[in-house]
Length: 468
Image (cartoon, helix red, strand yellow):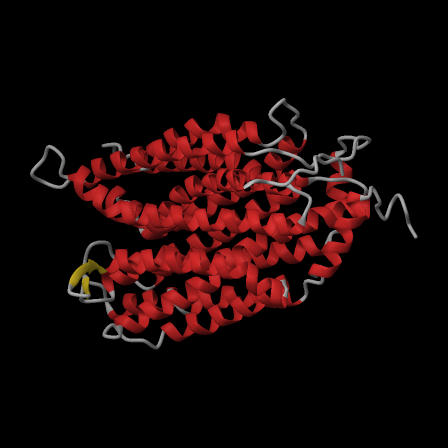
């Protein structure tokens, strides 16, 4: 490990966080609204969307390790990872707009358009976000800095999610009626995403400009792809995190993808009164979930300092699993209990994400210590891979479950369809959270072990150089 021993400043942590603010504006837009955009605006069937999500996202997830390999082997005056954030920002915004554009074509051609634009969107997302995630692993060699950076990242990520969810409906309402007496949701979506794209491009620039890469591979390390994959295959901690991350993203993806359907079609009321002011039920549910995520992120560091990253992660997922399953037994007249459950479950979800990213950085150190080689991009690309695959499986399950229970767009739903919606916000995500907690139970790279590894690496000692 070659490093510059200065520590990340507050400005640098903010700059790093802005990158996930930008990414999460689009990610939350995709997670919550893309399915319902394709079914209720674009005009595709739920089953067709579920299949598209599966096929496109599997292809996209396979690109993540490739992007990690490319980033690991990139050498510029700006570093390995930051150039991709700079030069990927504008394509990220432009392709995002195309994804939410509805051409006036026959349905078979529209489906081809959806596959092409959605595939491009996911590829550009990979181009920016694999290097962005990897950047955390090279900004500092200190575990506490990484947890702090991951916490900043997650606070800004959930803040970006709040901004996204709070802006969508007002912007849609404005742009869909701009210059027209009749709402045009197709135009509304296209112009709304243009606004998002502009904001995201600016945020990515500041991430590039305000961050610094300090940790470099050992000077004698050669670029051996075979060795990188062989070492990764021996890293049991990486496999455990991969399973936990995949399960967590299935949990999150199903909850996010089904939320708007659940609130739109299961509840008779569309607004709730808070202190005498009426708020949209959908917006309230989504925004308080994001706010609770931020509270969870803030709690992650003090709780994990007290009981350790592993225990914090595991208990949060078990609580989320129990409460998620409990939601199935709440009726459509128990709105406040639904909102309370959303708050607590979202806090649990917020707690685990900064820990997950920090733990990936720890596995990169473990890999370097045991093998003498550092492959930060490849290891962090697995995090993006798990994120995409979890989103893939969760999105496909959401679409197929809607179709299985007889969902039809923009009509009153049958009792069977309503039961499906209840399953999609309770048992299905609950099982994902439970599985994630079980994976982490077997994780043995504890905080004390990581600290010992970091001390040795900063002293230039590895298991390879000093087998004793």
